[in-house]
Amino acid sequence: MKRWTWLAGALVATLLAGCGSAGTPVDPAPVGSAQRPMPADTDVSGKIEQGGSNAPSCNPRQSLRPNGSIPPGSTMDAIKKRGYLIAGVDQATNLWGFRNPHTGELEGFDIDVVKEIAHDIFGTYDPNTIRFKAINSAERETVLENGDVDVVVRTYSVTCERLQKVAFSSVYFEAAQRVLVTEKSGIENISQLGGKKVCAAGSSTSVNRLAEAKPKPKPVVTNNWTDCLVLLQQGQVSAISTDDTILAGMTEEDPSTRVVGPPLSEELYGVGIPKGNEDMVRFVNATLEDFRQNRWRDRFRHWGLQRVLGNQSPPNPQYR
Image 1 (tube, rainbow, N blue to C red):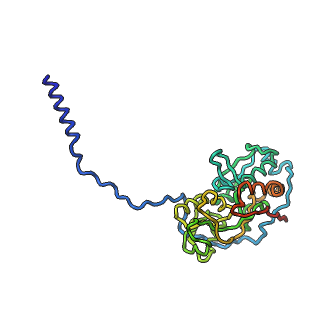
Image 2: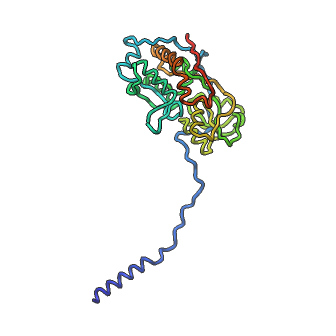
Image 3: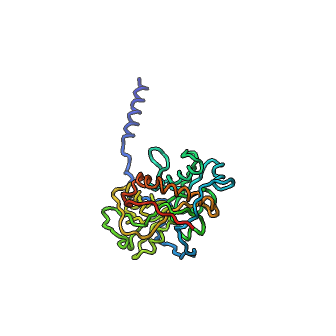
């Protein structure tokens, strides 16, 4: 009995000790102002290397005359024997090249163009005949020069400088660079953005045009246009400037934004093709001839592009 009494006393003493003072509480770590997250590889230096282009002048609208045949030994014949077309595309630009969150499939106007090319090579709209390679703006020339893809269809503007490195199809869409702001910003024109941060994607024609604007804005350069939209929504930039086609997709995602101001440039979209593959250029041009005549307007309406761009017709091709 004495043994149990002693154990009970020791247990009570232990419990009382556990309930004693824990000492002076430690001050929590001081909390300063939290920094908003910045997308990876974002350049906020505001510097743009503006070396003038050494490319000879050209007519970017002109391409090779169409030829839809697939002779033995041609680029298209090799693709057909491989069993699939490899296309460099976007996967993050709404309405043009984006991944449908419900199906996981790539969709958009540019994706439709890829499907048309694959159909004319293989004679079917079978998705197994296409391998999509998601790339950012800065990678478009690289993947073509390295032979990583057969075509690039990624809101790709034809320029004389780019024609020194890669080949292009005829123009399948005409866009114009403009400005996207929030509804409450009060900004109506790029002239109101002098000294303010304006976002654009790297290696795009939009970046250089920002450097030419007067008064000059402070460019913020990201890998993808979706990063620009995030920065605008967080208040880290005052505007985004790029093709109105891309901005149309952003307004669809965020109705609190709007496209403002007059066009800053003309942007001519073509299908990028490795330089030297002239047979592929002619083949794609034949595909685009049929697409413009029979399905272009349907896809334009399907993606709701008229809500921002107004009613448009397919561009008239020019050949040399």
